[in-house]
Image (cartoon, rainbow, N blue to C red; front, side, top):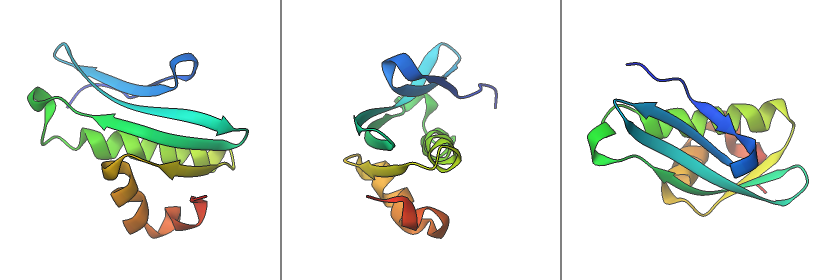
Length: 92
């Protein structure tokens, strides 16, 4: 699979484009040192490739590197965060 995940900090989103289709994750910064994940969107054309998990993993790696906390109103991201022991202590 091709396509590197990119981070557009100005638009508060992570995204990957493959074959002209875009999968993305959006977040907000309600306070300093905290990211709130709002949506993870993978179009049908890109489904089944693990892109949603890759997007959440990338944001969580960045949260860890920046020593931030995270919350989520996105059901997909919330489920991954809850079942990943390494991320459990990052929720706020």
